[in-house]
Image (cartoon, rainbow, N blue to C red):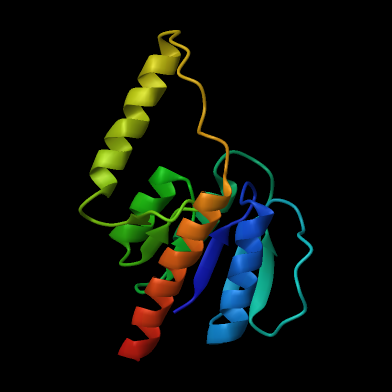
Amino acid sequence: MRIFADADALPNMIKEILYRAAERTHLPLILVANTALKIPRSEYISCEVVSAGPDVADKHIAEQIKPGDLVITADIPLAEAVIEKGGFGLNPRGELYTENNIKTRIAGRDLMFMLRDSGINIGGPAPFKPRDRQAFANKLDQFLTRYLKSK
């Protein structure tokens, strides 16, 4: 298993959690972004820089993923592509995307786009809070523990 991170908009506190997890589990962590990132020196952590543009990092990740890989992303269409390829998706707030919930998430995303396009101000996502960081850390730890026990 490899861990991919859709890193362009990923909060730094989540990156730090991922760095520690990669070192602890010896699993490769690949951060994908359209600019070079400062990452710790580690045989388990790397950064792949892609060209700038809409969804370029998402497309790169979707092309690279293999069954069993984990992708950290808030991008719902990317999460859907990951699940379709047999991977796992986890958002930075600690929600695991599954075959059971991804269609609902896509429908909610589409509804929000439709409301925005019709001129309704629905605001953006809630600010990232410490409880979001904790939820992510807990879910990641549960996921990796289950994976490592199954090896």
